[in-house]
Length: 137
Image (cartoon, rainbow, N blue to C red; front, side, top):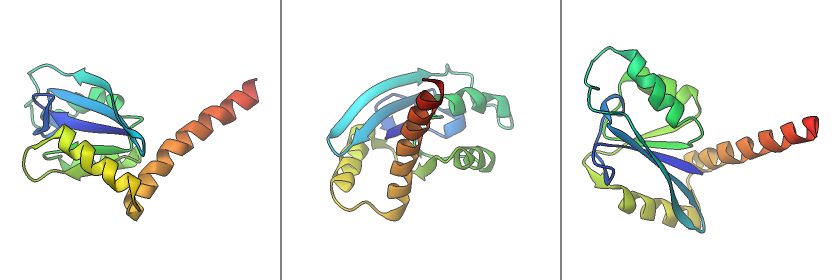
């Protein structure tokens, strides 16, 4: 499953979703964690009320199951949830690698219901791809 992190420094979750300079994406499963990509958004992001700034971020996380943020506005949260992505607020800056370690440990055990649902999103995406292949193949 892909997991996204709103970050200013690409090392820790320390950014409001709308104002994040970077979105770091990792793939996480029971085997471990793998860095996928960092999306960069520049520095002119603190324009409250500018919904257009969210569009490229929403596109960047479209295939993620979880989004870790320091904060997220109501409109942004609604749009993220509508994409079937589970937003998680981190109360204070926390290293991305520490969060990944914790998430990996939970996946190896018995994940809580919300996490099992997030994992299903990943499998549904794979199924959709296979289903498309059969129809066009």
